[in-house]
Length: 205
Image (tube, rainbow, N blue to C red; front, side, top):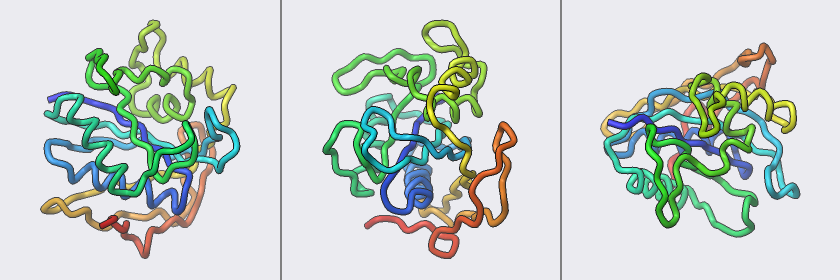
């Protein structure tokens, strides 16, 4: 059993629903268990500025899948949700990045773990620091230390929190929407009144 971390991001359509549906599909995947999900953050575009803002979070998983097979699950969810790859770092309905796979270092065609650019991205490290602040990066610094530095340089604002999807027989169940202000890790109040189709995410066919 391996503990892995996956970054989720979206900037098209109903962004909170996109994140929830991706989490629900991930929770329903064989040999994958979603343990925790960080808060959701509103973030400025990275790498390609001429696009809408993003919502980002990080999920902690437990899995018996090999890193390559876990990546295939993530790519499959992206495809099922309708992701189309065009401009690099451009708009996307969903983006799922395998950030960490236990303490393993993987360098294969199309797969590098730890993610080679995670240490540059506040939208990755700020939510990851919620889950594992003392985790050390390759240069010896902790996730919390680098997240604090990047947070001063890049726009990352607490937005809200998604309920962890519950599954029954592989079918995602209704999620618990939040209908009041929620307080972020640093005491900043975020978005209110989020609901997804009356409290239920819509799974793509």
